Image (cartoon, rainbow, N blue to C red; front, side, top):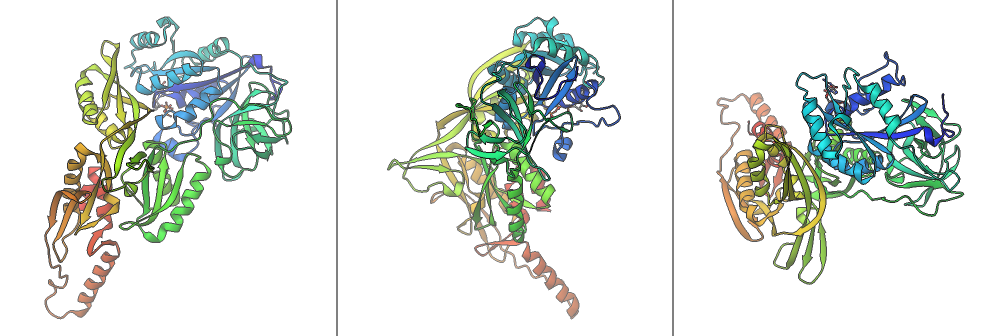
Length: 610
Ligand SMILES: Nc1nc2c(ncn2[C@@H]2O[C@H](COP(=O)(O)OP(=O)(O)OP(=O)(O)O)[C@@H](O)[C@H]2O)c(=O)[nH]1
């Protein structure tokens, strides 16, 4: 039986998603489902059909969710793809809200990981029917029996209820689709009430403008209808409404209860069509919006500066364009004495930051310097005034601070038990407080910590991976704030503070930060014609000092004799070199020194030293 959108009996609809830890094979399984249900024919099957963005394909991660309609056994299955990474938890939660069931996919050679748990908890919160599935059973290293038991223990079912599939070979995928039809509840909604549809994704398309993905909860959304966005009260004309299968198909009858599809309204900016918002009819609006709408809140800030100051207008334009497609990206102009004109940019988390940077460099051809990331601090002054600090330069100096609060997270780390010691050492070193520890099986343990977000964003994940040989996985969620003894450390060259190097750090770490930074800079900044002291200071108190000895750099020294053209060439070359220098007071600092000093990656520092 073929059903048309808009007249599909809700009893025949199944809305589900696949949730998994990164690399456990979600995209591969989704692709296989497209193929088996005949939505994509074998010839046009291209790996990872659902991941449309280049970066996603290259990095093998899913950033934007999509929804595909799959016909199966007389039913309509809507598969909603969810982003897998912690930075996008809110988007994941909205995608889950659009479903009644979730396939919990676990790699049969790896077992449960931190994001498996995080996603499972989100799915349980959303009251979804959970289908536990082990993937990659074709792998020689797969241990389906062992991990079926682990998974069964986790969700409280029998190990024999855990399905076993291979997204790669297709084994077990038909059975899985049958299982979705049999066990996932059909959507329930009120057909004849005012329309309410949940926006679970919104994507900017260069040609069509914003494409908004919705799940209709109650009522009906029609073609050419005026719609109302309930969080902003903005109204738009629907230009097109349809379903994805896997290419967009116009739905002449509109979308009814339980259906999943897309809307195009000519809106040019995803901020006007926000994930989590409720769409209703402007003529006959619903009274209440669907629960759970949240405005995206940036958690991590960093300064972004063009390496070539002339590229500032290009950077602004690029950010403007990216924001059309990324409602969570916020930025404002900022100037730094050392780095010139740039922007203070807010991100959802570290991955979000990396993605934005990479897109700016790759899609817009910009070369950028970014300052060390920092979190948002709440500073209470003695006179009761409060400041929100997103930049070390805004941190008040002097003795009038009463309290400083920093954001904290509840972090969950999963790893083989042999690494417990190493993990605790890292967490303790970062002011972590142990919340608890559980064995998932004999040799795998879940460790929970309260950790300051500021400690996580600074190379925590790299350390964790290297100390556990890549076996640990991490997930974190915001858990309020705590008071902390934080200070601002400034780095001074010849007595002049270099704003780009200032950082807000815990008092116990201030000395270490100061010494490291001063040492790093001593190696990175070439000698000048005068001695340059490098100091680290808290307020007026110097906590570390290094010296760059003076040198008289005479480029002509080597040119004995009177070859004037050679002399000129050398002088020209020196002038060229000077362009790439930034002046800090009288001190010339090469651009690369900034890049290297601000990078946590030691290879960049090595490169710059050469
Ligand atoms: N042998 C085997 N390999 C698989 C199977 N499914 C996926 N893979 C491989 O596992 C890797 C990750 O698969 P993806 O489908 O990209 O994983 P994903 O979960 O979508 O990754 P994210 O989008 O980053 O969350 C790829 O190299 C796949 O080829 C499977 O059933 N068997």
